[in-house]
Length: 130
Image (cartoon, rainbow, N blue to C red; front, side):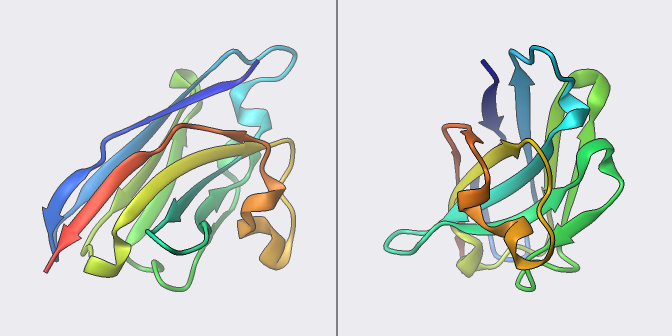
């Protein structure tokens, strides 16, 4: 069974940076690079939303409009690890950040839709103060 564990969250001031990591394990029959991987976040009282997605093998990436130009998703297939580099953080970026995996990447707006992903980590908290 695939297991995802996030780390790297914390508290920073606006304008600061954080790098999140998501370590994957338990892949059977498929390699890590076979999965569509994404980062999602959920702020208190709000629905979970897609932040960034990377296609199997890293060929393409997708970002929510709110993070374009500030966040970068990447992966190290040799380490089975997904990353999210977050720069120029804003208070509205505050929330619990989750990584998730899907068997393939959907197209269009579905690519960032949380309901398209079946494997989830436990999350890591990011707090940005003004």
